Image 1 (cartoon, rainbow, N blue to C red):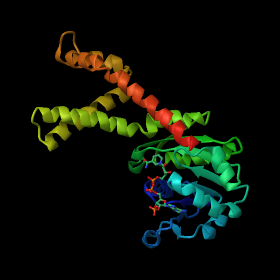
Image 2: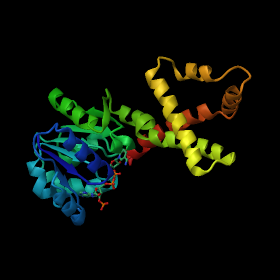
Image 3: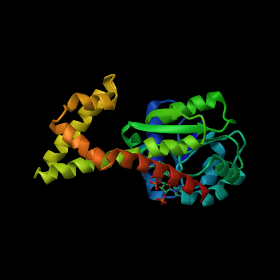
Length: 266
Ligand SMILES: NC(=O)c1ccc[n+]([C@@H]2O[C@H](COP(=O)([O-])OP(=O)(O)OC[C@H]3O[C@@H](n4cnc5c(N)ncnc54)[C@H](OP(=O)(O)O)[C@@H]3O)[C@@H](O)[C@H]2O)c1
């Protein structure tokens, strides 16, 4: 399968590099971006065939990953539509752009919509995806492998789960950073310098996460392992509950989903 990645930004390059490194595809990946200097540099690196004109590369592709910002899709689709062939497969990572919008904009049926997250850049990403029913099982399997080259991938059973997974994994790294920042703020309250606060907080996060992944207890049960009645940890957990921290995080995730729906209607 010949893959074309359109948009050599954060996401496009992350996937293009991970797919190339994984050797899933036999032929060289094509990458296209309007930025000529960036394309010249990538061409010199030798991994990809690079293009600055969508008309030259679109007809050569079996699958096209669209990784431009949603506000650039209309211009891009207008340039591509007359070049598209019905057998070509589209994989879109654009947030808030529905399968129906892509099908209409490009005049093709075979569309997979994916929702990546930022740690894909480190090979620790979580990408969810939903394929239109015109995409064959074999193609879905290949897409699954390509997306999983940046970490893990999960096939969803309905398109709306792109929005629900945005509220969990897509936007999720920012929620984790929010909690990390809150603990750094707490450490600084006690006078720790930045480096020491970072060490204390990050090792605590890494250790707790590993314990949860490797153990067979729920987070609730792990909390009980750390907290004893009337003790220091329980004092903190009681204060979190009094401040409705847990309910606030859930409300934030619901707001995230609602916003995903709003954006997909624009
Ligand atoms: N970053 C994330 O964590 C994340 C998470 C989930 C989903 N996404 C989705 O991923 C997509 C890409 O995001 P990103 O952060 O990678 O954006 P980005 O870094 O801005 O990359 C997009 C690239 O596409 C280029 N481009 C714009 N119009 C083009 C065109 N007509 N043809 C070819 N290239 C064009 C842009 O060039 P210019 O810079 O010159 O405009 C830029 O190099 C977005 O749709 C976003 O919703 C991102």
